[in-house]
Length: 320
Image (cartoon, rainbow, N blue to C red; front, side, top):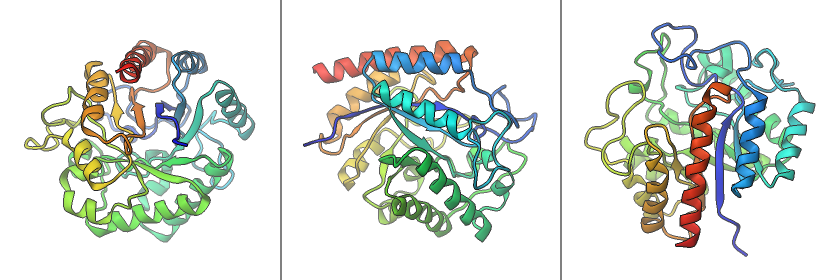
């Protein structure tokens, strides 16, 4: 029997993966690292209720440093969720029909949550910390089906405003990401990543990306033309990033395409329609909503708008 389509939303527990430390050159009040949890439970509860109301069925939680880790308490920020709090929230989601899936982003563009270990990338200590955190999070989430590892935007163009910039490239990137895949698989989950590495490294991507890794290509604007870096400038002015959905399908990867109201809510309905037309039914496993905003009351309107447009797109998709 085929598994139900995934209709997921990304919600941030931690938001310490969207900028440099206290660098004033990083624009945007949410972007710089903070040593405390930025999270409003009132909005969190309302978002879960809205998702359940509209028959969404999955919450991907960007955990980061938002949990009180036993293995590495030095990572956790002030007011991070305790084990008891986390388990209570996971139970609540499941009772609402929402499957909780953990996400830890190990891209060097989004790993400020790792604290001092973000400056030890690809060292033996780094590998052990990554393993410890994945295994502990997996156990805390009680054997989730999937584990999202992020791995987006690890290129120089995305770190031009960072005080400290680092990126892995060539086969080092692949050795590290395959190490993370193995840690996840050894625990029993299926790895899940963003797919933008494919955009500028097509040949090496298709030669090295394992077929069992779930792909979530993202494209924030209407489904045409080049994508833009939020840090400034086009990622590749000759690149049509929405074509990646087609190429991933032809290469045989399962996909959960990413939709967002970051630039325009039209992206949500357009991506649903585009992928229904161009991605095979067998490999289109669902859709993944990504408002890219912290879980704070001042972002409520953007979150609710995203869910409403996603619900409309779901309805049209299912009725067509």
